[in-house]
Length: 223
Image 1: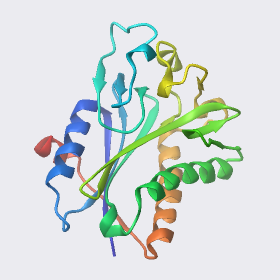
Image 2: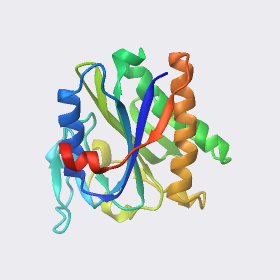
Image 3: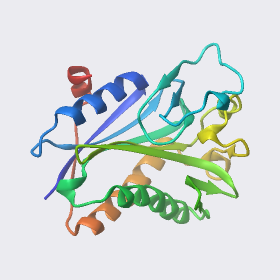
Image 4: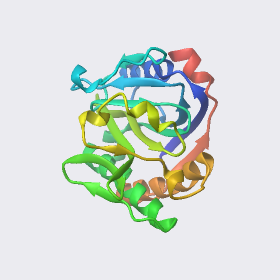
């Protein structure tokens, strides 16, 4: 039975979590554990390899910008946004990268349906929308058959921080919070979404997964 260690970090530094994911993926072996990391980051703008500086409309003085290696372009992370990172050995699980991305998106659609909301996908731009307003963005990286990065769900974050950028490189996009439509807390969103996400993964691999809670101290040792 595959084992996935689940780690939650409160109010995390993006750079610290990113360093852990990158370092762990670089040195992990076929015997090492997979991880799911859930967190809310301190305010930061992250820029994928395809980011365009023209998508920065106005420079924020008090929020850092950081170049990262996930898919996608520029976005904002901060308190009130649930970020879920998957450090998975895709080869060992028998999952293709596009299957994982689809799992992120369709799990979100299933979650929204569960709480009586209608989610939408855009065939040209990854992410999840409600009434053409984007509530979740995603981007992953695959290295040595293993994946890291994941999905960011706007629950109750300060949406004003998106106004100084073209989120995901799109000038006509409006970002929105889940709490515009539902009063679920970020912890409840995490619990419900991950239950659906893991169920979909189990269906793909054809066997149950053992999810065990693990200490975030491993990040300190490896970042």
